[in-house]
Amino acid sequence: MAGNGLWRTKSIEQSIADTDEPDTKLRKDLTAWDLTVFGVAVVIGAGIFTVTASTAGNVAGPSVVLSFIIAAIACGLAALCYAEFASTVPVAGSAYTFSYATFGEFVAWIIGWDLVLEFALAAAVVAKGWSAYLAQVLGLLGLTVPTVVSLGPVDFDWGTVLIVLVLGTLLAVGTKLSSRFSQVITAVKVAVVLLVIIVGIGYINTANYTPFVPPSQQSSSGSLNQSLFSLIAGGGSSSFGVFGLLAAASVLFFAFIGFDIVATTAEETRNPQRDVPRGILGSLAIVTVLYVAVSLVVTGMEPYAKLATGADGVKKTLATAFADNGVHWAAAIIAIGALAGLTTVVMVLLLGQTRVLFAMSRDGLIPRGLARTGRNGTPVRSTVLVVIAVVITGGFFPSGDLEEMVNVGTLFAFVLVSLGVIVLRRTRPDLPRGFRTPLVPVVPVLAVLACIWLMLNLAVFTWLRFVIWMAIGVAIYFAYGIRKSTLAPSSKV
Image (tube, rainbow, N blue to C red):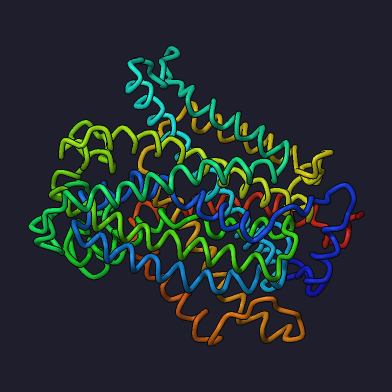
């Protein structure tokens, strides 16, 4: 241990030693292939099946292709930093654990609390998307079965509850089993994405690419819903135009969330120094190519104005473009593929959330009982708690437009991880690194600047919500974590 109070750090050696505690030991079952599948499984989901079309219609038009590339560059820079950290500190918890070793306990708590927001909220939002697609698929089978039913004054989304309970059980049984399940489902949805690209090419009308960057439009939703950057720069709106292109990149960042979850499974990987970097960078490379190709096809098939969210508030999807072109059989397959795709997204988000809680619990910042592992080597108690929280959130509350809330939390984590690489290179140059981020400090600094830039292009209202959430986290830390931490002088380990 180094330092006192808020800035006490947990050494890399102690973090790794804690992974051998019998009561909190995770089973090492995962390979580079498993991690790549996990990454692709969570990244290819809500982003490509829903956010792509709606962002083109509402914010960027055909220039959504450039927005994807901007978001991918920011993610790629951060991924290089994640890869070094995960290969150097192969411990559950991802950015939380990395921050504990470099910036100290208070910053680690802040980032852990931030990841709780990212993973749990994202799992609830995507599970509700899964439920909506379930209703569509049942409709294709001739069954009119709504997945949302009224229970007095509240609406109950039984589809969301069903998928979260099933996947939570899978994760409690074993990470390797859930990995095999992911491989099957991921193969299905990658095939569907390739179908979108191959079939859609034949329906592209190049006239739909003009104007590639549509002229800016005045938004009627108020200044709190425009991007912070456009407000500061006096743009008046972040709907279309250059401000829209930049704002779209920040929204589409949601489509890339997931590669960082690979880092949370480092402790369960057989050879983390080699396999974790491969899983992170491999999954990101695969999905970037697919995203750019799909966005080119969809905006070429359909005028961007027809992809805008309707008056009923229902967002347009990939299936919309195919249905409007009379390719109904493809629209049906896309709906089924989306159902499969969102299944693995929910599962890996739940996995990431449980591993972060597990790491925080093992350090005493939340009740230590949550770190106990069951006979299958998984943190069953943490899994149960996460499932309950997501079931309540997704089952009884409307999701709304929460992608940006997830994004601001993730980008904040990326900033700290990127800075952490620079700090750890200076403070612990002796550590063995299975992967070394190239051109340090240039790449980490560029990653920080790219992430901050994307954060500035998120809505003002998103920033206000984020500040409130973090304030609650600070209060919890000073009321509980600072006294109960395993590094606290009064702690009995």
